[in-house]
Length: 58
Image 1 (tube, rainbow, N blue to C red):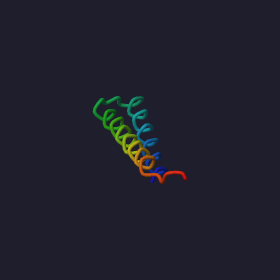
Image 2: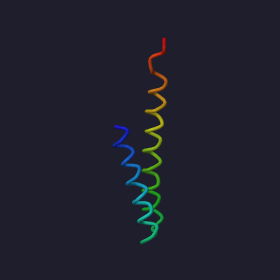
Image 3: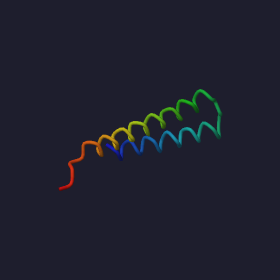
């Protein structure tokens, strides 16, 4: 799951850069940026929940 989300983030950053250097349409750029930000938020939530619910060490 984390690897899939990581690749989705990388693709969103590549899309953001591609839009920036070609058409530079702000709406498209924001969509790519927002997608990456949402993916990162999901990854942080999963990471935090994994730490929160990890079994305690003896």
